[in-house]
Image (cartoon, rainbow, N blue to C red; front, top):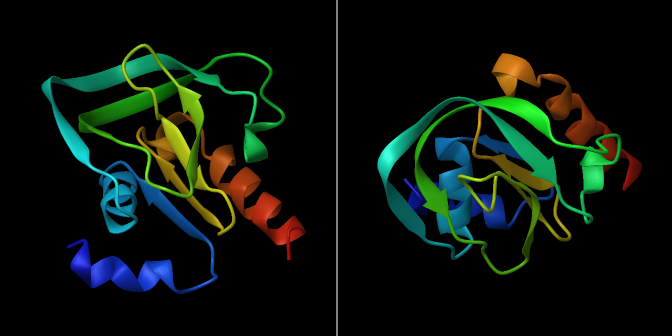
Length: 125
């Protein structure tokens, strides 16, 4: 599927990848996947990093719902915005393009993250 999504490298529209979507974004932009021995399922804490972009309103860790069995490596041009004890790249974002990927499922506990991302990329236009 990564080849079918290669167009995402050339457009300047917001893209949000959730779970497998984050994995596809990583691969499309040159990252790699690592299969976990056991999947990560359930609620756990995610800690925002200092370069947290659209996570500016988060001063401390927050709960997320996860259901994934692969980790992504950080592709060239991306930064890691948040991590957990399970995953160093819970949230990734492109440095210059309006692209973000979530390893967890924001639609379960963190729907507001979608709006925060879209509002942040809207400010940069």
